[in-house]
Amino acid sequence: MHDDCWVVLYGKAYDLTKFAKVHPGGAKLITDAAGMDATAIFDPIHPKDIMDKLLKPALTMGVVDTTTIKPEHVCKPPEAHKPAPKKKKAVKADDGAEEEEEFKKPPLAAMLNSFDFESVAREVMEPQAWGYYSSGGDDEITLRDNHLAFQRITMRPRILVNVREIDMTTKILGVPASLPLYFTATALAKLAHQEGELAIVKAAKKAGVPYMLPTLSSYTLDEMLAARTPDQVVFSQLYVNPERSRSEEYVAKLEQAGVQALFVTVDAPQLGRREKDMRNKFTQQGSDVQGDDEDEGAVDRSQGATRAISSYIDPGLNWEDVPWLKSITKMKVLLKGVQCAEDAVMAYKSGLAGCVLSNHGGRQLDTCRPGIEVLPEVMEAVRAEGATKENFAVFIDGGVRRGGDVFKAVALGAQAVGVGRPVLYSLASYGQNGIVRMVHMLQDELQMVMRLAGTPNIPSITEKHVITTNLADHIVPLPIDNLTHKTYQGLEPAARL
Image (cartoon, rainbow, N blue to C red; front, side, top):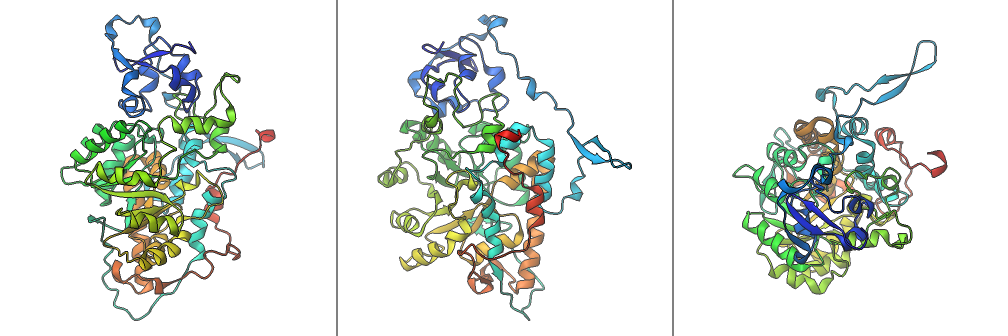
């Protein structure tokens, strides 16, 4: 099986012999399905077109008449996708003894902030899926600092400004938005909710914000595009495939469908070590992108992440490839994952439309800076080169949880902010309606902050409304953020598992 592994998916046979060794979820999941129709265990999480995105065309061996496949050669659907039993939590009885009671999900109306959704999602999601979404790199320093960095920026409000009417509307890359916010790309949304990315597309329309379609989605590109309303504009994220023709085909399809902008992820030539995810690994369909083969001698485990990521993301991508990226599309092309001023300046000089200051949600290089902390140096550097908001858009993502966070990012020069986990957590908790409510709460918070800061509209928000003296020094004592501390689930050492 290790030397010759063919698998049937959606009526096509694929040669996965080599891919099995670099499969993000480990080789065993694939080799166990060798010679079988694995569609039933593949479909609940993956999109139908994933193999066309990842594999060389030569590895598609041909069409299979599924009526000729014997029942014993068909993989059974995973048990894990049956409704999970309700979780229980420990509570104290009247006599002081601890008892267990079923978790009762509060009504949607009880959600008052984005942390509320996170706390509910932790209870209702499968542990493996929760670990996949919530994990960060190494010690998760950057994961946590992404939000705490906003608290190192203090407000400098102005008074006696006419703020009777507050206008939060803006344009993101020319696309109208109800506030300076978009849904950033996140992988495998079906882990949160069966409707996955389709629900996010629909919620984005209702909330009046753009959605960046992910490359590694749970639904196919066609299915996500079909979920749009006729007048809805979306962006797309791109992992550049080592087989460049795959990326060219994908980009051409995006452009033909009217997608307005292409965000090329540049901060993942290798995956970070996400230990929370590794300890509670999602192995049902191999969704987890942490390499871990059962056969110890087959592959060097220390290279697991490198193998996994390089199977579908080109670690050789570099500045010399930027002209190629620009040549294959008329869409606006931006870099997602810039973390210093020098790279932002290079992006501007390369003729790109902008960049996203991002550390991949704290899932890659630990102890690197949050996007909001990188923002002031980037704005100073690109402005010195002649960049304006019109010819070079700068965005940030990571740690945005409050309307005040949106305000601070805009004040420091960002055109808008991206949110990822809050979308997934609200989706997991209450479906499409949860996402819409989460955005409405951020709108309510932003409206309040704008009114109290003396800024009646988005253009009136400037760097003079915030103080960044303590943003980069990391030594400022802060009050305990109870919402963060009570929703953050800490890492556990092996001895305590």
